[in-house]
Amino acid sequence: MDFTKRDFMVRLCAATGASGLITSSAKADPARGVVIDGVSFRWMFQDGRLVGELSAPTPGWIAVGFHAETGLQGTYFVIASVADDVHRIEEHFAVVPDHIPISDLGWPNTARLHAGLFQDGVSSMSFSIAATSPFGARVALQSGRHVNLMLAWSHEADFDHHSAWRKHIAISL
Image (cartoon, rainbow, N blue to C red):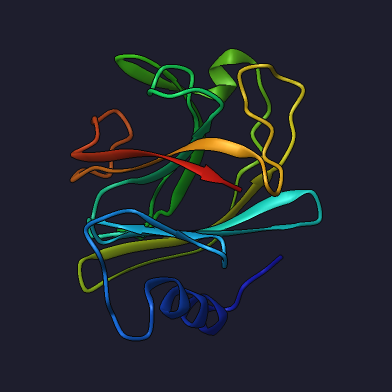
């Protein structure tokens, strides 16, 4: 699904709420979204892919991850940097205290960055990833499935930097 810049901005405004109300406690809503501490993640499923929109108050990288269990170890996640001219997106796997690109494990990358924007101190992206994978380390991403969602961001665009902010939230996709 390709987004125009206008489509992205319309969806981003919807994701962050037209009234601009950002709460400090996590809230999941029926429209498949979570907002916590100024970080917003919304998702839907389309054509065998999870399509997501993520925004966070940082010029550094932003990330969203999924795990069947609690904690960071074993979390599969998408990490992106959109604040500079070279937008980057990768899929990573948490091997605490670090994380590595899934390609280092011989797993195929499925992430597609549809749009990225850094404006007024907020990094935002629209992306998609394959909803299923044959690899046991990746949680199956299916509508209605219970997962532990990880949202994170860093002050730095370099993926080797650790998060400055990270939350884990139990949700139903």
